[in-house]
Length: 457
Figure: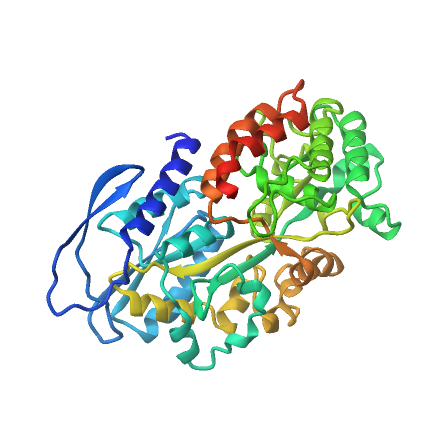
């Protein structure tokens, strides 16, 4: 299934949830099948729902299914360890972590929610938060969190919860508040005779323009076959373009769309200049790994990449020395960009009360401290404890503070929108045209705003 079809299907199914008015799975004296006819895209659709009893915290056997997108052995070992601690206290409960690839995650979870086998709980990324909250498919966790012993909900800054709160309800607990930062290959910088990011930071020269210059220097003077830069993913133009483009756009003073979500802004002068920089690096300088080439930073032949803490596990056995640095500044100054993921309970879970209790257990201060090895914590007390530097002794503590801790405290979460699936689908078709040598960046971004205009109303 192509990504465009997947995104379109996800949005269609989420919209169907809204039209069908999904309700929480609550205990019913008698299970009755409800049949409702709704209009979806002008077509009558019969929606059936059989209420499921909500599991309680008694001793009846309960199996929780928890969806994640990580397949990393270290991440899964950590999660299974936390689950084992919980099941030791609740021996009637078993917990299964199901891995779904990131690119397929929203689509597959949405399909499962629409079917008869919904997951009980799972991860959810920031871009999906508004549509899932609006669709009413997430459980309100606030009553459970408020009553959980020593939970200290006030330890979460309000800014961290903004995507997951609506009125007095909380629909997700961010477990990863992860700034995007730069990782660089020290060996390639040495080979090219280039100033490293930390050296440029000391001289107040760490800007996106200077990143472009040093990337070209690595391409021209480094070992044969070297590139200067790759974005957030080896397939930076197709896999996760927002995580590559937004850091540059924000540094140049632009945005993808307005804060109220009513105006497309990716074709405004600031955003155009930012994307033009990336386009020039790719096709004029040849310093960015080009479209269709899957050369990754971990290969050792790329000078710099955008990364988050959890992705550094890919470099555990890297045959080169590397360092990290905060995002470069631009005309609008330093703009930290955060990728956020939360733990949610799905409202159709047949084991909702147990799932909510497990989520509260997962997100205590003690368990956040364990997760901090890979996922920068959203809790203030854990973040301020110095645990990120302790858990990552191979990184320069000063750079951990500058690139990660300070990024969490000053950064903003990647843009999200209640219509993000449709906006993403419409704009991705234009982004395909953007990453060609003869593309007119302004014209392509104008078309992107035009093609997505209906979703900013």
